[in-house]
Length: 237
Image 1 (cartoon, rainbow, N blue to C red):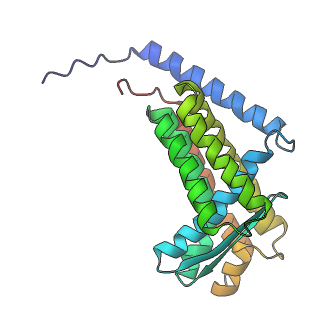
Image 2: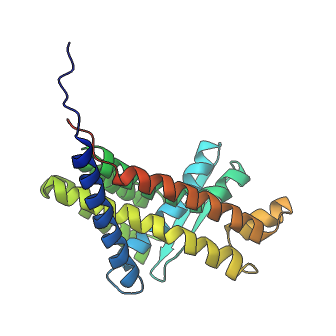
């Protein structure tokens, strides 16, 4: 069958790419300005949740199990696991939450699967909350049950463009959160308990070294993600 897809003229592609860059930059500026306000707080709680969930999934993938996940309103959390590969489980937190955000941003930017991804994210949150978030009568359980159900409802009822931008905002917030979070936990407060501190005790490699390595990896992933997100979306379904 002959390919009838028309190429995008260079001038049009450049203009579209430029407008996407400005829009994404605008969202980033707004998120930064509102970072310490209640408006962004729910997004930060979700990033913490996906951080802890990534620990749990890494444990399961390497033969272990999740005992419980706790998330508190002060933007803190813990994932208690049993068994599995300790190195991969500890490493998965920061980089895992970055991967969730990067995937959401790229899929929203490069495909037309916004509803499916938003529905999937909502379902993951609800199922993980029912399985692992404890105690049942806690902020973490209630928040994520409501948040997951809200994303499922948004996927079902909101127009596609709204689903697209919900994913972009979540993805960008996740990417923006990771680097300062790593710096705060592993370099600015290297003496406190963190994933990097536990990894340092297990490997003998200092906490700040793990923090610096994760920051470099996170910045590289962020650069690739943003480049993919500002390219024109392919034509077709």
